[in-house]
Length: 408
Image 1 (cartoon, helix red, strand yellow):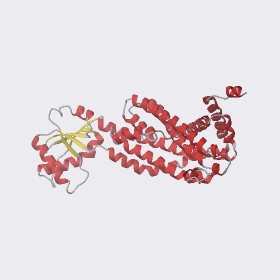
Image 2 (tube, rainbow, N blue to C red):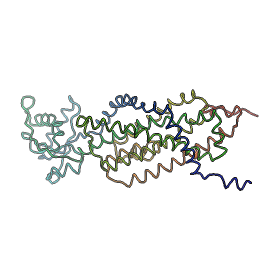
Image 3 (cartoon, one colour):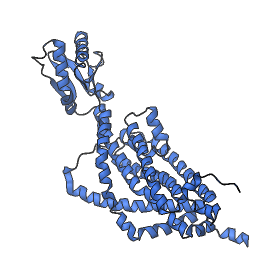
Image 4 (cartoon, rainbow, N blue to C red):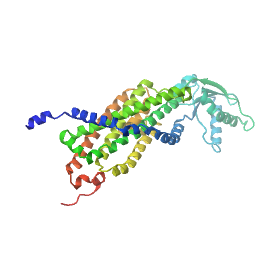
């Protein structure tokens, strides 16, 4: 009889599918879900507050150096003038002296380096080569330093000759930073809005003893897998609805919307990676939230836990947002490897770098941690909650885990 019972038990994937389908239908066709679809109105407030941080990040990654190809005397005079001007002025660009051989092809120099513009000519007739916008950013400072170096300041300032180029490596990097910022912010807002639902997922079922019936019928790992992927499916439905409204607004706004530079990997692949990283980020955070929420016994405990959980999300987001300003550094590598910040950091890298292989590794790494988090959460729930049974120990909730056990 036990043998037939064992044979009739569902496999892990089959049991997870049953739980996922049950939860998906229950949530999708509830009135609360239709009210929830109005939720994106509130993150717009967060987006406006975060614009100040975004501006600071943009200033951090702005290129502020000028490649200088002039005679030795003029180069030395410009450097000396800059040092004198720093005593009374701030924000002057750095001057990097190049050899005449390095400066033969100005366009090629700017494409392979991270300088904003290239300064050539002499003190009386300085020439700036670079993107049109960058020239107008630095022409005033260059004219001032050239006049100081030539001894004609403050009565006479040389006229800057402009030689605009289409784009440079520095300009492309600055543009792609904007795309990376937009992608990270959108990913963060969606995850902050949607992942919090997982916290209260098991509270009602624990109160109604439904979770005990499920745990007796199928493995606890399958319950966690099913519930988490059901919430992910509900999230994709919500995103599809919001995306439809957003697409309609996009068509109505037309050219009034700001132009977002193309990511390094192109829009189709960048969008596909955005979906993949949202799914991984949601599953990573959701598995932790599901574990924390499963330990709570009341809605009040869930509300108490929501604030530190939200703060943890903000810390992870700001870590990835700051790390993308320094690609290749230990901080950026740490943000890409740390599971909770990895989706944000790797999405920013997709906007800045054309390499595809790091994303394959990152998605595999994140999937591994999803499995570990779900397995650990199910094990903790089974040992700490289900093992306590119906007695007082089973009602202690999340905060009861931190209390010392009394002697027998």
